[in-house]
Length: 110
Image (cartoon, rainbow, N blue to C red; front, side):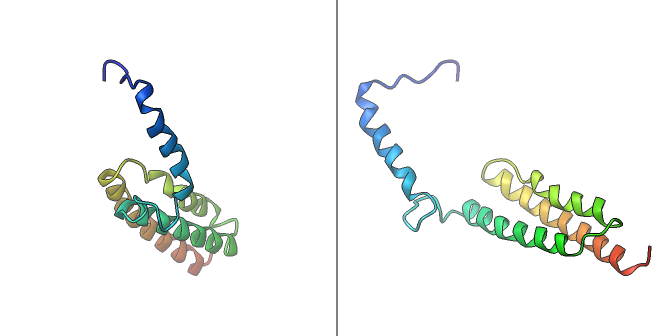
C-alpha cells in the first residue's frame, strides 16, 4: 500500500467493538479459534512443553548441544496460514530426526 487507509470518526464504534472483543480471544466464543492454524498452534504449545520437560529430565553434557537444537527448533514455525502449516510439517520432520539422534546418543556409550 502506498498510503494509509483513512478511516474517519464514523469508524470509532467499530474500534470500540474490536477492542472489547479481545476478551473472547482463546475462549469458546473466539470466532477464529477453531481454524486449523489456531488449533495447530495450541497443539504445538503443548508439544513444546512436553519436549522441554523430556529434555530437562535427560540432560547431560553429551546431549546438551542436541537438546539446545531441539529446544530452538520451534523458531522455524513462522508465517501466516498455509506458510505456517508447511513450516509445521518441516518442524515435525526435523523434530523426528533430532529425536532419533538424541535417542541414538543416549543408547551408545560416550
